[in-house]
Length: 332
Image 1 (cartoon, rainbow, N blue to C red):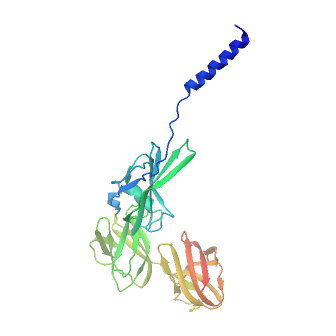
Image 2: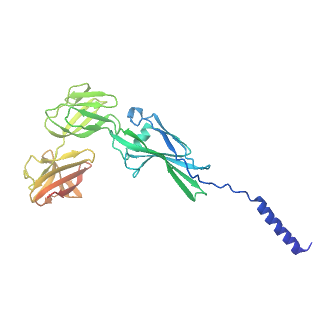
Image 3: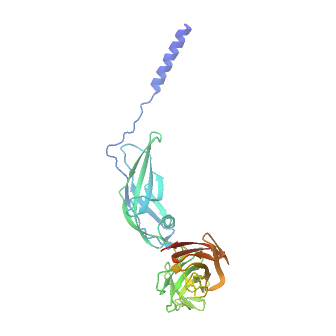
């Protein structure tokens, strides 16, 4: 056979094979009325430490775009009425609409943005993301929002009962030792309640007991309260941070101008009139612990802080008990 004819016939044969092997493509056609996913049921979101290992289940239905599609589903929550501007991601998975999570894991997620030991009204939704054409295009569909009340739990705590204000002490390690600053009125005795077990503690002379008598302070003001529910002991130590100096109303003499503690920010603050001069921070009207220096560097025994006359709000952050920083804002 002529060589040129052979090459030509071979080329024609290859073209035929290529066209005969080409498969008809199955095209994904998006429905004119795609069906969004739905959030069918939401469990009770009253979270309790005692139920930490329990499993909660959120149930939803799949998105239906009109063709067989792979979707990733996201269960999201936000503060009620905020339209998911700052959502929390609770769960994500492909094709799984029976979303399960433990109470402790969900509590940890909620605590990232919602306050501990409080009720927060939240909105929840399922958001689905469909990827088609090898991931070059995606479609997003969200369920109708469901609202629920969520209650988180923080660190193990003891609530002060009878102190006159709402306050608590917490166990950072969960080992039965609870510590915090508390504000006490010497005319009011208080007991301590474990909200998880409903156990009430009282005591006297440093000895703690179940259903014991009310505990009293010797003076009005702030204290560091340490309680050990395993050793059944407690310690109440005066912790009154104040301003002293020739810029303050009492000059360099006690009593100092006492500051108040903010448990949520961990800072001490006071608003008062000052005259031009200097001041320092002292503990319990005593020079054994005193901070001075600059706004961004307070040290033990540091230099006087300077101020001109006016009404100020001063906020102190104590670092590791021995150093600190402060802000000073002039109100007029």
